[in-house]
Amino acid sequence: MTDAHQDETMFNRSVRNSWLLVSARFISDFGAFLNMVALSTYVYVISQSVMHVSVFLACRVTGGILASLFGVPFFRRFNGRLSLILFDVVRAALLALLLIFPSTVQLYILPFIALGIGIGNSMFAIGLNSQLLQWVDESRRVATNAWLTSASATGAVTGSMVSGILLAASGYELVFVTNILTYLLAGLCILPLRFLTIPVVNEVKNQPKEWSSLVKGLRVAPLMAGMLLVTMADTLGSAAHNVGFPILSELLTSDSPGKTMGLLLAVWASGKFAGARASNYILLKCGIRTERLFFYGVSLMSLGFIFTFQQTAVPLALVFIFIAGIGDGLADVSLISRIQSEDASLRLPIFSLMTLLQMTGFGIGMLIVAPFYIWLAPAIVIIIFHGIPLVTLTIVWLFSRRWHPARQ
Image (cartoon, rainbow, N blue to C red):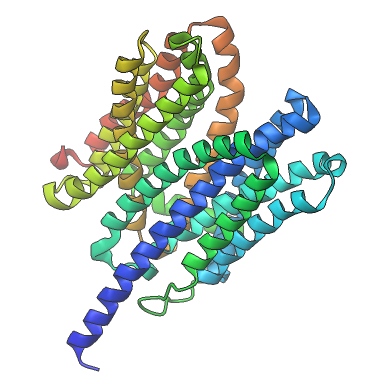
């Protein structure tokens, strides 16, 4: 085989792998949000208890935290497409339990289903992001990340909307069957993936050594550490606007809050799609560093949400939430691309740490934020909690001037 023919083969394989991964990500996130909406309401329907719903959501978040802790040793030992397919099959099997057991038993197994789905969702994301460069050529990395973020945003809103439509039309069983099929279909998209080159098998270290190596690696990459710190702070803002969406929708249109909330989410997703596509152009054509674009994106996102919650009319709220979505897309693509540029030994631990920070911060944030909506107006609550990532970002930027004064 000539070098030219081999290069063409690798290019074609990279392009095919890229679209397979984007398709799998869209279907997987579609399924994740389909069951998040359906299962949350289903728990309340069969239990008539808010406490059961809280336990269910807590188990889901706990699953994400456990995945971040055990993702590193797992993917060190079991890398490749089969491990991702495994988590698709596991999530489908867990949902199938709801079609087998009667409702009297389901209430007791739903927390375990939530835990398993939380683990599966996070492990799938960690495995896909950390192994992307084994399937996609370096030259297509940023473009693929942009499409993955776009697909994730589209899948999130589409899954939420379709869940509501199916529930209204046919009930929960059809939603569960549809959800099972989505996970199996995502697995089928992963199945044709082929490595560009045979990956080097990494040393499987014990957990303390993995985290020790990660700390050492972040010490020599302080901007990367700063980006992770801002990401953790941003989870508090995310918790605040997620809790606040129903309240804002009620204030904007008391007669149809559900419709308004769906519209806000759809416009946010459109903004995130636009931001993800723009990041591909900005990073590749304009030469802006990924760290700088990440900080711009987080600033735009937090300011967008702050101004969204200051509005008293729907049109202006939609304008600002679209801007917030653009910032979200810019920040997401630049963060993932920056982590993927790290050495292979650090890439997987950093993705696991990022998931741990996001899940822990979001879980704690949901608990902290709720009382603030009782004490304060939503506009003030959002300023407080989206002000935290803005302040953190400013501090990181000031310190970064000491680390790289020539680049400022």
